[in-house]
Image (tube, rainbow, N blue to C red; front, top):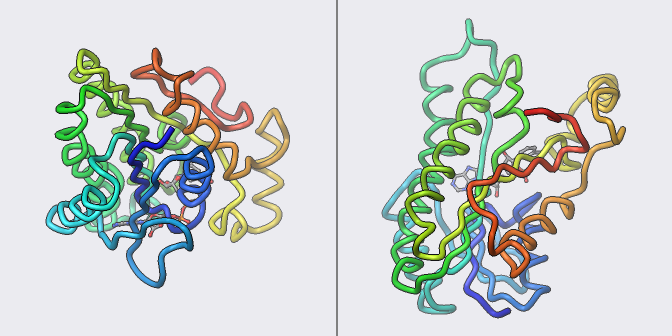
Length: 234
Ligand code: NAI
């Protein structure tokens, strides 16, 4: 496989693991990043996904280097946790703007080329929290739940063009974000995970590789939990 892949927020954490996995499988992988240096060995394109003009120039750079994007992984995401009573409207709308509208912006830009090619794989990175809810994360949870309706609508719109659209709902994954949680909170979360541990970024990366690879060709509109069983039944 040597397809043109774009992973948003692919410069660290889960996104970087996804980018490295697809690159190891032979794909030409580009990642968006906002500051600092892009990861070695991957094409870095600077882009803030809240800005359509930056998205358009990032796609142009990728298209010049690797050809039209055939596999899009909308991974970039952010959170601003707060209880509803204390959550400002900006806390709410800025998280929606990044996580949900950001995915809309990149998918819309990517799908143009995929429709022309009559091939495409879109993977949206949601969260178990989008399905279960989470106190203090109404904005984040709403944005991640929104990705499910968004992705399933795209799956219906684009299926006839051989474009699949799927959602991954990760549970707690070992990243800087989860490492920052207090020990007792980590232990409490693990108690609710049937597998009794956090996942690794590679668990998400391998699921993306499967969905974007030949094995995933007949899967669309699916929400795949990669959460150690935490969200079972949702
Ligand atoms: P992270 O904070 O390490 O990485 C997030 C990436 O998104 C960074 O590259 C950041 O620059 C990028 N990003 C954020 N806002 C952006 C914007 N406006 N424009 C462009 N890029 C932007 O987070 P992590 O843990 O690697 O998460 C990746 C995805 O997985 C996120 O969508 C997150 O919500 C989701 N997720 C993470 C879980 C975890 O346990 N770490 C659990 C469930 C979902």
